[in-house]
Length: 380
Image 1 (cartoon, rainbow, N blue to C red):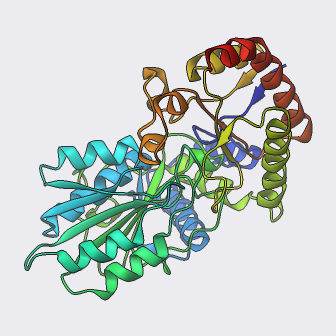
Image 2: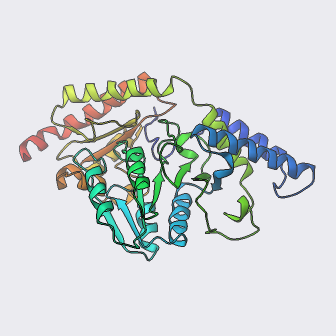
Image 3: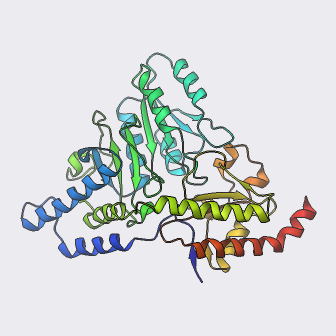
């Protein structure tokens, strides 16, 4: 038996997306060519652009196709620098892609603290905006939902606060985990930029997008033939963007509620049998598919290996860093002890997850936990 429960790392490609990719590959054509095949390819790209933009309440002309969320975040931070920002402030729970891009920008950086639930503190933001020096233009970076805990951030409230003060500050959102899991309204976010990714929603890997506000100018990070209105060089990944749009269109109306019920089912059963575990972000709004739990005394990497051998794909945290076996900076920012951070497990459900999968995972996790439980109790 193999049960995939790592949808926050990547979600299996939806059948509709795979079919759309194959049809686009069969169609061929370069979107920049003026002949019939080229025009057909261009039409496929623009239909996909409109579909994806509509799903986040953005204008299609303000959507730039990229190679994925990492490039989109890099592009937004690059644009912030070219637009005159003198400092980057990013939340303590940002993805490594944003943290690394901010560090590489050469601009001074500052951390935006979160509370014990993992939500960015709006009181801190209010004070920081008031303390901004004359001429200081800040790029604030805040993810819409955390990839490890699933905690949804107060991004719309933060965006409104940033927009209401003088200074021309920018607001950047990493919305990668929202697509396919929760509604994201770019128009209501007051953000200048928002990064998206196809494979988190069941589309193909290697394609993403950056939504831009109509008044936010973007200087190309990758230069070339002037594609994407000069904002991102290189021939568009026609099959990828078509698959991205097909995945977005294939999300069912009841998918979110169905997955949320499975998440709650798992959490109830695990807590009933093991009340000592901690579920991070449990008291606030989270993505409907994400469970981040700590079982003190049972190291994350041991849990992942044990469950993998039992036929379950789960993660110790971010897929981009879980192989490094290091404690989560996200949980540490939330006040987790070393033991709690070192025993965290991320279980992320998705469109393929069934009730049988949820029940089988609970049985496997509790079975494996029972093997180490006496040692954990003795150590405590």
